[in-house]
Every structure is written in structure tokens, then in C-alpha cells.
Image (cartoon, rainbow, N blue to C red; front, side, top):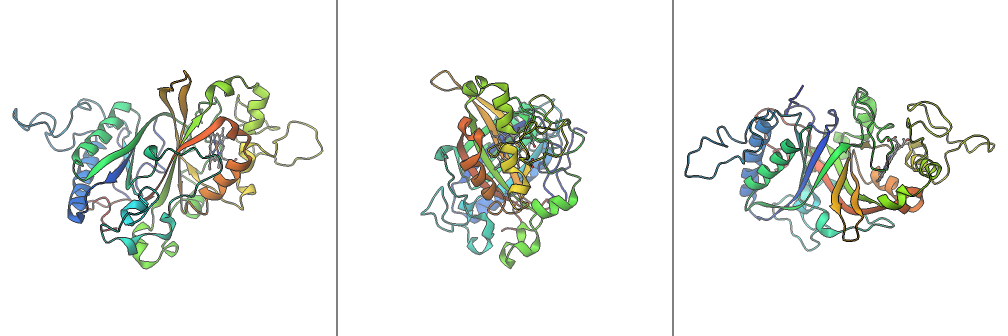
Length: 383
Ligand code: HEM
């Protein structure tokens, strides 16, 4: 079970079991040459497929290319297993012309008519504290693995192979997955100490996936059919104000979330997977308040909208004031971020009591195509 198949109808890393570790990288494409970009994507695909089998980027790449050339593979994953490595690729708005990252950008690769309508940059939200160097990107690669060294090795080698074609715009390490994507997985905890991922779309809920995660043919004009069967990835680097949170009373923490900290049950209920009761009722018993996170994010509050969450905890050391620079690297997959993530985040940004302890410092949106068949390369159906 250490190898997750690279080829398939869907890209791995979306509904496949969430691994423990993340290395996410966002790249700017720095060439205007379409052939160079396609060539790199072909080389990336071959290397990615090998790495997900626990191999080096090219055969003998780490040690056997001779004494007088730099090794083609950096070598730190030699002897390690694939550790369930998945590599998931997505394309950002900047590849198709002007974008939030580069408003004066041009359509360098002749892809303007291939741009799906849903690949518009995300809007700004109330209380956003977006840092541009941590945001956006032309290509996003999500590397997930149960071994951090395997995930880092994969991103490092893709970056290295992309020399002259792409440059890393930002990257993020994550640990302790904050969601479960299968019913077999126990629900992990986020940095606020709460179970996170209880009420997530699970991989065996095919109907919900078709409705909320996978792009359908009818969603797009003919030029953008390359996205049929794919999904949109929303990334948000959400810093948590850990120290003030840690001074908040347990009762306040639970009221903010709307669930008990111990077993994750909704307030007023007993078991983790009990349905929340949003009835504000007669004032008896513990209630889920109007500003509780799970009330505002619940489909009942959003006209039925849902998303698939697949985020990770992060700690990037401490800031200059001695506070932990920690939080949640939020990743969501949805069929259309503008009709799903955007209304959800709008509701949260303006009303969620948790916002007092959160700062959204990074944002990105990527269009992740469907999976590949053997012989295909990443982005083949786009170019
Ligand atoms: C549920 C924490 C940000 C959407 C939850 C739960 C927790 C939690 C503890 C309850 C357990 C569960 O069902 O997973 C957090 C923290 C966040 C954060 C600490 C920021 C650091 C977000 C954002 C969104 C979001 C940005 C989307 C815009 C949801 C949804 C649910 C949920 C959809 C399930 C609601 C339901 O159907 O009951 N979150 N969350 N969360 N959260 Fe968040």
C-alpha cells in the first residue's frame, strides 16, 4: 500500500487517502516558448510517475550517470519507499493571460480560448491579509506523502528539472493532515486542537463527488473540455493566532467551532458523526450559535454547497515577535470555486467567530485536469 497508482481516471491526491505530509509548490512560468513548456511537462510527467513508484527521476539518475556530470536526481530519497507519494498538478490563471499575479500579462501560449470560465482569480475577502509573494502561480504541484523527505525530494527535483522554464514562486510544507478523505481514516486534529474533517466529502460518496468535486462536460465551452473530470484546487495559507487562542476558555473555543473539543461531536450531541442540530430552539441545552464555524460552513446555510477539504497543519518557525507562525494550509477541491468556495468563505470571513483568531495570508487557484492514461503527459489535453 506504499504505492498510489499515478495513472487513472482522476489525478491521485484528491480523493485518495490523505497522507501525513505535504510539500506544495507554486511555479511561475518564466518562458514564453510553448515548446519549452510542453517539453518540461513531458519530462516532469515521466519523473513524477517514477517517483510515485519510489524510483529516482530518471533511470540511474542519482548515481550512474558518471563521475563528471551532476547527478540527474538529487539522491535524498534513495533507499526510501514511495511512502504513498502522490503528485497532483494544476494550472493557474496566469498561464492563459492577465491574472491577479500579473494584471498586464499576455496570452503567451495561445491558450486564451482554452481558459475555463471558472478559472478566474478568487476575489478578495473581508479581513484578508494576503501576501502576494505567498500567493498565485501559473502551475501548482501538490506533493503528499507519508514521509516528508519523499515529498520534499519530489518538489525539489521538479523545480530543478524546470530550470529556465519555471521558477518557484512560493512553497509550503505541511504536516498532520487536517481532513480525512476516506471513512477508514480517523479524524485528525488541527492546530486549535479540534478534530478537523469530520463532515467532509468522502471518497466513497460518488454522488456527492460528482455534484461537488468533479467538473462535468456541461460546465465548460468546447475549448475548455480538457477540464472535464478534473477539479479546481483552492489553496489558502491561514495563519492562526495560536497564543490568544490558547488563552481562550474551553467553552469559548467549543462555541466558536460549534463542536466539542474532545470527541468532535456537534454541541448538544453525543458522537462525532451525529448530525448537528442548528435549531436555536427554546434555550435549553448547549446550542450551536449563530457565529459558530460549523453552522456558517454547513450546506444548510449555503444553499447546499459543499467542498472537499484536504488541508495540512503548518508551523513555519516563529515570527519576529516570538509568536509561532503556525496555522492551517487549507486546500479544497471543488467543481467551481466561484460558486462553492467563494460563497462559503464570504460567509465565514464576515460572520465566523473564529475569524478573530485567523489571518488568511496566501491564496491561489489552480485548474487540475483529470488523470492521465499511460503515455499521456501532464497538460496534454490542454495544449
Ligand atoms: C468544519 C476548523 C477554515 C470550511 C470545520 C470543523 C473544524 C474546522 C474544527 C469541524 C469538523 C469538521 O467537520 O471538519 C477550521 C479551521 C480553519 C477552517 C481551524 C482555519 C484555520 C475553513 C475554511 C473553510 C472551511 C477557510 C471554507 C471556506 C469548513 C466546512 C466544514 C468545516 C465546509 C464542515 C461544515 C459542516 O458541514 O458541518 N472546520 N476550519 N473551514 N469547515 Fe473549517
